[in-house]
Image 1 (tube, rainbow, N blue to C red):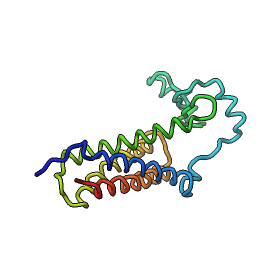
Image 2 (image 1 turned 135 degrees about the vertical axis):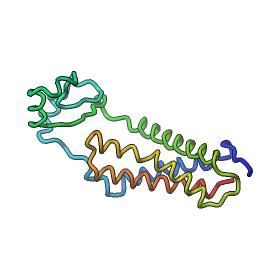
Image 3 (image 1 turned 90 degrees about the vertical axis):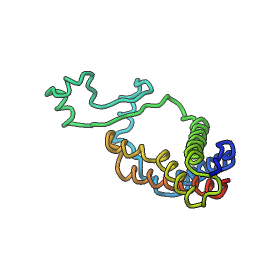
Image 4 (image 1 turned 30 degrees about the vertical axis):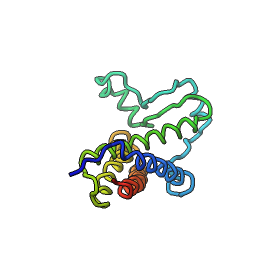
Amino acid sequence: MDAVSLASLWLPIVLSAIAVFILSSLVWMVFPWHKKDYRGVPNEPRAREALRDAAPGMYVIPYCADRKDMQSPDHRKKLEEGPVGWLIVMPKGQPGMSRMMVLWFLWALFVSFTAAYLASETLPAGVEYLKVFQVVGVTAWLAYSWAYVSEGVWFGRPWGHVAKQLFDGLLYALVTAGFFGWLWP
């Protein structure tokens, strides 16, 4: 069994990351399935004014500083009245799309590198396309999408959105696996 070096997989690592970057751009900018994932809040001007002084960070509403206070009548009333939610506040100003795109590409490179590492440690040189496709595909799919399930469980991310993210991640994984299967030494 001839071992496959990680260095010999640089081409599928880079090409699959580029392909995932392009595909994800199409998914979010061209294809219609994410268009209704996000909505505006009622009375946005009032909500914006109420949140204007919130520093960038993660917030929960209603907030409870101490776990023992979670059972208090006041906190229970807040939960019943609503809203109940999680909020992420980003820094003021236009979001840095260039920065986000670079970080996303670096993430795609990392996922491909991780899939390459696992495949190089478990598959020999010359193994058939489908076996490479399976190992790399599952690894990439786990990395790209399955954390969204815990977001649905613990943070109320809508299950429809979770399903779409699982599908998106499957597309990215299929592309990644295809490049590795094609270019496997």
